[in-house]
Amino acid sequence: MRNFDKIVLPSWHLFLYLIMIGLTFISLPQGGVFYLVTRVVQAIEMIFFVILCIIFYKQGIRLNKFNTLTNLWFILYIFLSYAFTSGKGLTPVFGWLNIIIFLLLGICYWQNAPQDHFRYLAFAFSFLIYLNAILLILFPDGLWIDHTWVGRGDSTRYLLGHYNQMGFVCLLGITIQTIYTLSTKKGVLNLFLLVIISLWSVFFVGSMTSAVGLSLFAVYLLIHNVIKHPKIYLICFVIIYVLFFTFIVWYGNSIEEIKLAANFIESTLSKDTSFSLRTVIWDNAVYQINQSPWIGHGVQDVEWNDVHLGASGPHNLWLMFLLQGGIALCIAFIGIVTFVIKRALKVTASPTTAGVVALCIFFLMSLFETFPIVPIFLLLQSVYYSPALIENKE
View 1: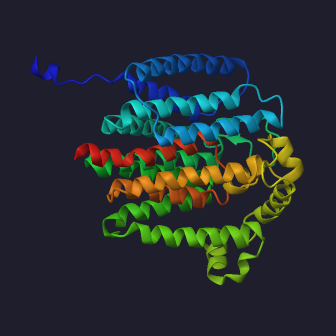
View 2: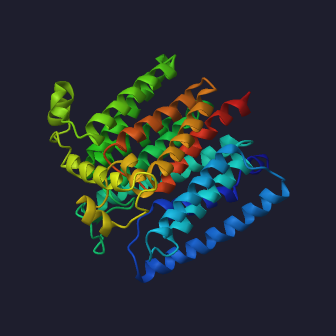
């Protein structure tokens, strides 16, 4: 009987995370039975939303600043999704609904019981990353081909979508596991396996941007104990980052003038110094941004990007925000990121520093790729609540 008493049954929150993360990150073909599956999962998602709203109301909880800023940003984003274009359906609304559910989970549970919920998240992402690796072995040529894709990139789809999206999901899962492990000293083996399998996965599909990002995070994990003043490294990163975006991405200067960087790109990454013609795409995007710098052109589809940019997207996070919502949307996002980093660095500890490092690596990857909005804000939320693991322990 004693042994039975020690068994802890999984919380319903774990099931919720599995549903939410599966809906957000698993890539399914459009139409047919998959359309029905998506709608059923969205119906379950609505039930979760109603339950969390009731809990939120009964507990008398107030929205914190992060929730308020995020929701205001999404209100602007949803407006831009419908103001300039039509035919988007409810996809932007369901994306915001996903974010609202994660925000409600955070404010209802993450602040007071962060260890449990970071553990649930880590389990859900670990399951997804391991399953993706198994499917890569079984189906090395991809799970399906997106015949509806009108962009010029690869239409092969894996469990986690496009090969570059796979790298971001791996980064997000590793980040959550790292925050949990460094704060509780649990799950060390799982963290090690996640890093190895994630690196193998992105190398296997040929995503060099993700491979560099995940490799940098792996290096950080090896030396994190010797990093004593993370703010100094953060300031240096921001300076270099802004200079690269200003002179290379925005003004289109050639990277060939920086010999060390050019050699690294050509020799190590086996890429050309135009970053696979991204410099041409960036130049087209900058031209379009200058046509409407304050409010952008709205959240356009792939067809619009293909005509005006010569690609499925601008291949840069900041150019994407400037195209979609101009300076207004971009500054609002920078404000949220700054708020999250300041909150995380108020607690000088390895878990919070790891979260900030993950954000920096994500922004490094985002210089050359764009990623879906919902995972970006889930990463921001994870970093925002990382100090709760330290505060709760104390």
